[in-house]
Amino acid sequence: MAAARPHRPRPLRPGQGPAQHVPAGRQGALRGGPVIEVLRAGALTTVQDQGRTGHAHLGVPAAGALDGPALHLANRLVGNDRAAAGLEITVSGCRLRVHRTTIVAVTGAPAAKITVDRRSVDAGVPVPVPAGAVLDIGPASAGVRTYLAVAGGIDVPPVLGSRSTDTLSGLGPRPLRDGDTLPVGPPTGPAAPVWFTTSEPRTPRLRVTLGPRDDWFTDEARQTLGTAEWTVSAKSNRVAARLEGPKLTRANTDELPSEGIVLGAVQVPAGGEPLVFLADHPTTGGYPVIGVVHPDDLPVLAQSRPGAKLRMTVVQKGDAWT
Image (cartoon, rainbow, N blue to C red; front, side, top):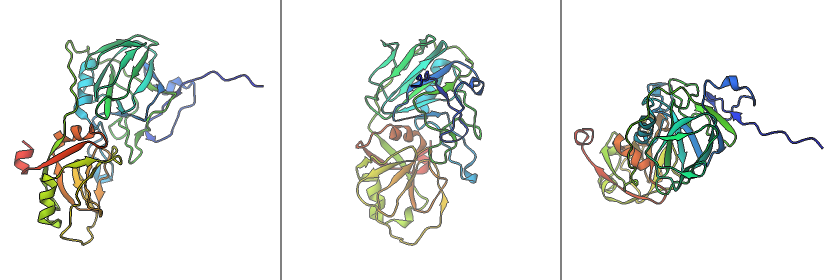
């Protein structure tokens, strides 16, 4: 009987879509340390930064962290540049081994526990992690997405100017799996001398400006958009938050040629229940867009769990975007 092979972590080779690896042992593929080993990836943990903007005309979504302010705060806490990449951890938490001493920060959806070698540590504060230690981020106790920043940033190669995983197009590194390893860049600044108290995600009330196709809907549908209570569907993902509630009736039932889609667009498919496009949204769509949610309200929506209730407030663009 052949002897069992020793476990070797798999370096994650990002850049050209999902499910690509460097053979075990090719540490030259990692561009620097510390190296993070993924012991438990969780339901969906992805590398994210502020997104790859400027390529919508090529059909490339922006991607990026769904709760941008949470990732930005985590980067500030460990001394990273705003553009540094971190991990977006969805609902179920993750467990990592850090092979070289570093500093981390956890923000976003509050985790039920955060430990370093079984010692409890706080969110919203720079946390030293010694070489070889295991960082365990528990399931989210509220909200959906927790963010981890590491001093120096997750240093996978950028694709079109971003290190973000795009779950729609497959650009960037694929979602993490157990056994993957990640490179981390050199620290660029000192950790923050102060810390922040993270707050529970608030009940969403989204500001929405009507247009460009609100005239394709009845007066009643436009009124319903801003008065009804909506429920976040379990079918929501990084592409869109799907909402359950009253049907929005169309006044114009013609077919609409595909046209450009922006972040926060409230599209209404044939069934009449709206969806709000998030970071991995397609760049074009063929269903009418009744309105657009203010970008500052999208992080709150992204932290809303299936079953959560929300309302929309219809505002004029001059009021919403100031």
